[in-house]
Length: 310
Image 1 (tube, rainbow, N blue to C red):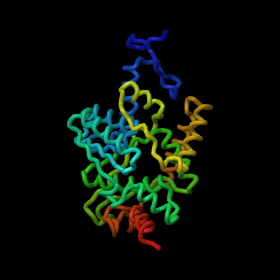
Image 2 (image 1 turned 90 degrees about the horizontal axis):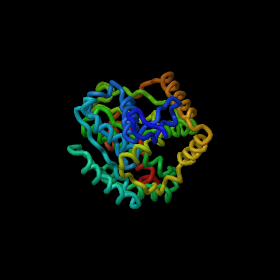
Image 3 (image 1 turned 90 degrees about the vertical axis):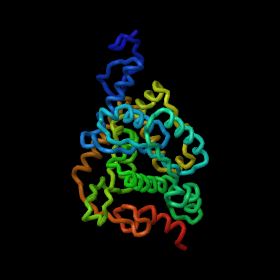
Image 4 (image 1 turned 30 degrees about the horizontal axis):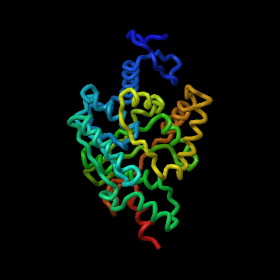
């Protein structure tokens, strides 16, 4: 029988760390929290932050830790943003998550916004219209573009400097592979100065404090903390290429339990980004007036193609 450093029964360890100690539930909880806090860089501390909460385990763990350590991180403002795609299969559970957040996080501002409010359409309606007209978008590509646009909109609206995403190590690896398949270049560094934007608005930066943490560890944290999450899978997920890449990564994890290949993918992504930093001009979309690096933002281009062409 193994004991934790605190003397309690040790039941958990970090399989992704070959030097990991064995921990009791309480100490392992603290271990995960320290890993998450390490992912919040110094440039972020002391700035207002919005956490994008989907209702899944990753974003709820991130919100839980940032809220608990708000004073330590010197965050002058922390808000939660819940985007509602208005998918019937998920809506009821998301309402339960919002109720949990209201009960659990005293004093935390929670902003619940629907796709209909921001874009005039529910995601199922967009998917149906896209399929009917054969425009070629997958549900996840539509949702991803609209979600990014919505988060920037809400970030500007609530004057935050950073938007925290619950993107895990596996998510980053899957995105890197997906972008490689699609021929998408590494991330750009946007110039958000007023002279370029011709606007007083400032584009919030996205941060990913969980990007070096496996979702396997976050599942344990959720179990220990008894955090409720949305259990119903998105009905559109299986139509995405990402789901196939995720399945591939899961099969690789069975061969490499320490997840070395995941960290290698992340390292190669970061090296590529450092070598290809460039700047792109920022505009106010001529249709919706939201900040974009195109004259017509990606969301408006999708709406135009789905509803107004042909």
